Length: 102
Image (cartoon, rainbow, N blue to C red; front, side, top):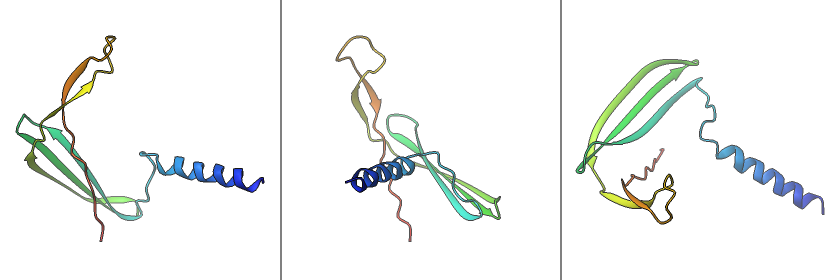
């Protein structure tokens, strides 16, 4: 009976470690890709792609590309800073980013 709680504890610990967004990655021989979107105006967003190439822990190349993409419009969300309940504000919709590695 002790094994089941121990396994659950290990599973939760592994999940907690994997959910850390700021974990350190190996930069021995690797390529780091950073994707970011910024809202320009009502019609356009900016997609910024950064590629950092590392060899033996040293960044040897850095590429940055920027592309304009269509904006998705606005969505109403509850204002978390308001003291009035059910107070909504409009914010730009965010893109979901999916990466396929081959």
